[in-house]
Length: 60
Image 1 (cartoon, helix red, strand yellow):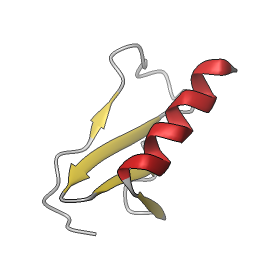
Image 2 (tube, helix red, strand yellow):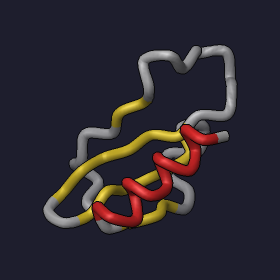
Image 3 (spheres, one colour):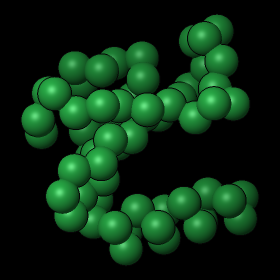
């Protein structure tokens, strides 16, 4: 993944070490990573898969 991407964390996330993810968009893909391990593994999801992930998380 391009390291120059602008990664964003939810505004509701705290800086207290909670389990947070960050997302970044680039053409045709949404990147997802652990905010506590920015150099660690990342997921690359298509827009439909990312939308489904969000929908399922909101139902939790």
